[in-house]
Image (cartoon, rainbow, N blue to C red):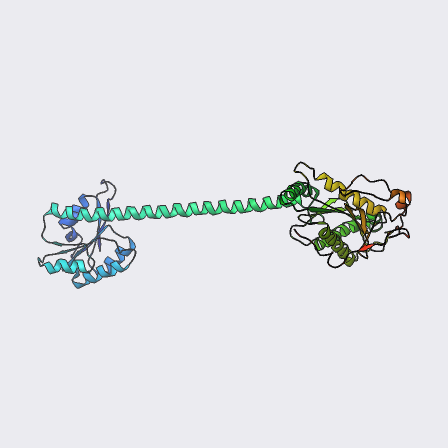
Length: 422
């Protein structure tokens, strides 16, 4: 194999041409076609054996392959078929050169995948024009392939940028969710914090007005929690708060129910679309879960396990301008009354006055203290500002559930304990 390189003073090579021809020495390869191509600054590579031609074409795909049929014979056609099957060389222009004038030569050249058959001898200018057409097409294909590769590279780069951008968005979304959780979730008990409660209650109050369904609020206070902290230490107190919060979540298990740490040892449970009976059911369920938890409280003056004082209030906003604070105030007063009556109970602040639900699930009117002077007489509309209880109610010991002068308690039947969900 011989390579004819252009003069070093010549411009940069315009392309590469491989010629399969027969020659005895390098000089004999310098035929008119080779010389013309070199004059046009093409790098001409000549070989006289099939394997040499194939190796050179595979190693450095040329812009044009010239096959002298006198040198190749039938092997030239077979080589052309082989090149057409290889993706790397399938588009290389192949021109056959021969001396025969029969049309069958052209047909055979084209049938095996060749681009043209040129009969020799041929005018030098005509030959160059024909070869230029194939060379230009090859260079166009090469340019398009380079553009395609560049485009693929750009698409790959853009896809990487998009993927990184999506990953950053996901990461930011996760961080944002974490920050929102930190902002609206109590770190100790993992229930909603006071900020979340303050955000939700005005929204639920408006929903209640528009839907015409009442909403309820439970305010819960852990009985003698200061004594619990003094007895078990602050770490023990933290564990107590966590256990109480978990019990409340189990008791208020509807998806829309929202348990929140209201402050210190106080918790709130927002119950949208829940009437008085439904709220009573939740309060009793929470008391039951607290009892099942069996959280020891040797310092309590009520029982040897943790208990709750729960205030309950249910309202339907009369106007859109009515403040939700009336609901909070009603539940707060009921919780305060539960503590005054001896703790470990639920007090309802409703149209019939402040009524206690004790552990046997009976309703006790508000004259349990036995003093007719302080018996509550509340009209159909709920009255929030009620007379103070007698001094006996502030005793640390539990007050009697029903006095001898009290009317018989009204017990909740199983039907009445069924919760209304609106």
